Amino acid sequence: MDELTQQLLESTHQVGLSFSLNQINRLLAAQATKPFVILTGLSGSGKTKLAEAMAYWFSEDPRSQVCMVAVGADWTNNEPLLGYADAINEGRYCVPASGILQLLDHAQKTPKAPHFLILDEMNLSHVERYFADFLSAMESAEPKLALHGQGTLKADTLDVPASLDLPRNVFIIGTVNVDETTYMFSPKVLDRANVIEFRVSVDQMSAFLAAPTSASVNDLNGKGAHYAEAFVARAQAEASLDPAVAAQLQENLVELFEPLAEVGAEFGYRSAKEIARFVAIHRELSGDDKWNYKDALDAQVMQKLMPKLHGSTRKLSGVLDALDKFADAHELPLTQDKVKRMQKRLKDEGFTSFAEN
Image (cartoon, rainbow, N blue to C red):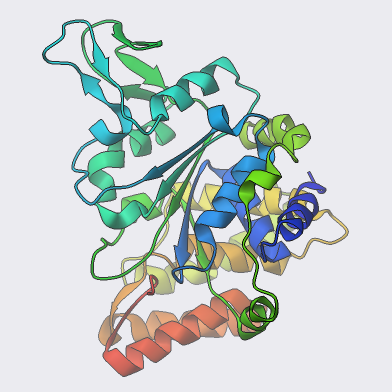
């Protein structure tokens, strides 16, 4: 596992993609922690490219293992994702053109291979309207997606049962931009995901402008396929922390719980468990000799605790001050930078949120 991040980083650099080791490590750890990740941040900063790059890198056969879907602003139910029973032709099922059902079918037949569903511009429609079945299945002991109530129906080369298991080797990535055409995520969606923000630094832009490149993720096809089975196995296995790290994490999370609770943004048992799991997997990916606990803590404060924050000066000034002090005391650069930006917007506009244009 400790080879994964470096190998994926080198492969992306070879095809002209400029991602940092930290970004790739956080994405891999987040996907192995729970197979639902949201990528947000600056438009054009590489969110979709990184999702595609990881998916193609792991996939021996991207046509069967990767499904990219552009979310529509008119999605008001699950039919664009899962299809529907044909009301005119008895015994037939209308599958969505996106190929999602074919992806799920292939994932069931090849359980050791990772499969990737990438939902581009995920918040162009209300996520809860079209994605509720997936959100529920992720938390269920029997993760089933209800399709119809008529036994087995025919759809071209597929036999479509009344319900379909959500395979545990399917990893879902949603990309998000924020503007006047998009919708905010509800807490129940954010609770179920790691939210990774993308920004572009001055140094990164300077390096890009010095030698602009056009990257093709097709050049990454299968380059990391020999890691695929191990990655799926790690995502499905339990993860535990050693007692010293667990005690430190407990102390840090308890310290943050009260200020977050004062604004209704406290975390529950599920989030606490997933944070501990992330820290354990982040350590494995980094390697014991290179791992820094503060990097994992920084990532989880940023990705799991802060995304639910939004509101006015009266509501957020206190909790942002507390987060700023916490980040400064524990040397958490991602968290501190984000808090500073939110505080500036709060001062300038009287309102702020985690999501930015």
